[in-house]
Image (tube, rainbow, N blue to C red; front, side, top):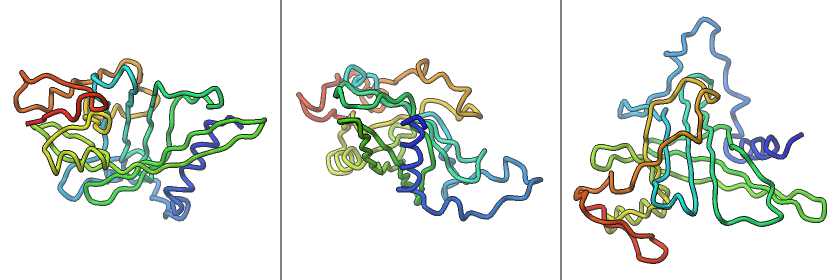
Length: 205
């Protein structure tokens, strides 16, 4: 079994232990009727991307499918400049997520190999969906805290909705997804940007 498949299974066990217990939907039930809308009438489905400003160090493209399966699924490509010779290289992560009102919980697993043995580490990231300057945005907990307390943007924890869900995971070319500038969330588009690690948070006001 390939390591990536093991990671996905680990993620599902950690995040969604009850998926296998879900009742089967009637065979004649339409795909549209299976969509799971957010209570405010908005769907989770879509393509979300990290901002272009952090692309030198890390990049994320997240696709959420809330209708074609019996659960809300995700497919994600994540890259980072933090690497180790022990890390097992991964192409994409995919599996199931949990949602709670405007929050989504995404399980992620990474593996390393040392002395011929594989070690897995599973993490659950929580994002909160809000609108900033008319755009749908997912904010990781650290980014949400910065925005709520200071109205500032922590670029490494921001995913911006850039497109509708394409219909099938395999139909999307992740490498062709454009990463928007964090300035697209600014009220004043003339303001500059800075790296949060070296210059502090960006002013989204």
